[in-house]
Structures are given as structure tokens and as C-alpha cells.
Length: 127
Image (cartoon, rainbow, N blue to C red; front, side):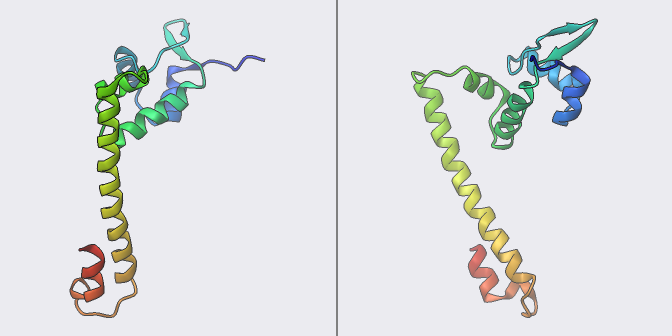
């Protein structure tokens, strides 16, 4: 049994995007419509996984051009692989900072020190 195609409005709603974003992503080679139903683009349901990947990559700081390149990359693309490794290192740093901030906020939520931001434990965990 073949999965039913989704029209552009349904894909946009499910992905939390405007239809214009889907058309932009299509122009940039990030997604490909399956065809048309009248004047409306239709997509295979697996486009939602692709859009999740695009959203994740955008959240990690990749540009649209980098994502387009990433989606067609081969193992021989050394420059892209280097960029990916560099981005992974940046994300490790961000994760470390966010983890320290989370731990500090959890501590401050139960700390009795006045003022909270001068608590030695608070300062140690974010520093």
C-alpha cells in the first residue's frame, strides 16, 4: 500500500513552517515535491523527516547553503567533513555552557543565599 501524498499546507502545518518556507527550501534543493494536485505541491510523507533534519541543522547554526551541501555530501567531501567536525566541537562547547547554566539554575531554585547570584556554589557551577 502506497502512503498518501501530503499537500503543501499539511506539510507546512505538521512541520511548523509557512508554505513559503517550503517553496524556498525547494528552490535551495533541501526538499523535493512529489508532484502537484492541481496548483498545489504535494510531498511524500518522508519529507517531514527531511524537514526535521533541516530544522536541527539550522538550530545547530548551519546555513541553508551548508545544509544543501550536507544533504548531497559524499565521503570524499573533505572540506564539508572538516566543517562538520568543527561544528560538532562548537556544539560540545555550547552543550557544556548550557549544562553549567542548567545546573546553576537548579541550584539557585533551592538556594537560601542572599542574593542568589552571589552564592559560591552558583558562581562555581557557571564559571
